[in-house]
Image 1 (cartoon, rainbow, N blue to C red):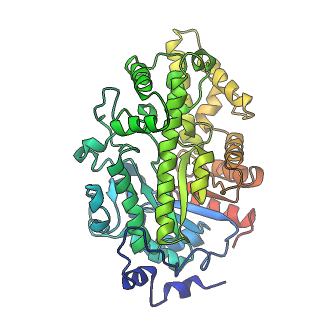
Image 2: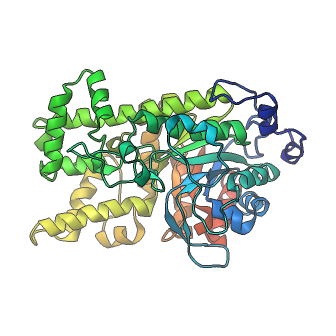
Image 3: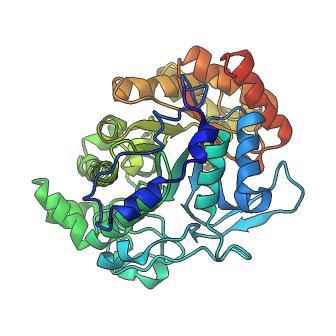
Length: 481
């Protein structure tokens, strides 16, 4: 096994090699990796143990120190670094300091020539003190020294820092006008060019092992959107686009009052699906078109990345398999165009959606339903799938989704991809997740579901006690070093 420290001391890097070779084309030049995951895999290569990180982690803690702590104190052998991100508040769980704001935008020194053809100008994140800080470079260097793999994590179609500047690229509503949203349309050719440029830029200029594609979905029930490019996609699929557009536009305008339609468009499931399947078959064509748009994007991403360096991997950040189809994420089809998949199986975050459904059921029942009764109705749909949730509404509200849910969802994802790619379930590490819950979820993922890896979110918001819990599980249960 090669020495990761020795690799980091080599006199030539992939960036130097590509520049020396004149690799200025957008994805047409294929170069061998000088520091591929296969050549410098970490000691625990049998498992994929990844932590999601943000630029501030390296800025506050130092790239070398943060990566060393991830490896030594957390036992992680891969990190997913947010090279671009959306706006989000963070709490520094294991370092002194107060909350801080992750601003949307890029956290690396992008090369403008890669983005010129799209006509869209990328922007650095407006993070105070980090205007010229190349967090991706710091992460790559620190990771090599620590002996862990680096994946550039990108927020593809949620472009909230620049969306207001390009209304013509945004998702459109039923009237065909851009919505007040930060999401670009998956079918828009310029948006496609722009998102691909980030992959080409980083693949050419940074020493990464691959990519982690995020925000590769449609924004909730606003769906595929009603722009001319989406309509053209429908026509190319052989559909009566005029009829489909009119039917779905009427559905959105009437407030999604068709029984079950709102829940299906938001979550991919419904308690009373038989009431609308026969009456509204167009809804399924609408969902299918969403899936085609997302899958086509990932196919383009993988072709572009592999065209630059065949050793670079592409991982996907997806919703859980039971409801990912609602936002266009078809695991079966996506698995043909990627190297691994992380379904977001966050036990508290996922429970929030169910809590909202229960509260809505209670509110609209006119006092005829108690929270427990409404919860029992939803719980029955999970029992039908063989998933055991906590029996009482109070316990569910406190603990979130059960470990059994994570196990069954992981196994479901594995069945959908049919062994084409590994499934690395996403574990919630931030509040209100407890140390005991983290351990239970890890047991479910590895010991019961049979996963060969996990990802967890996220480094900045974990206490040292939680970080040590991962290391203890990896060493005591998995036998890693």
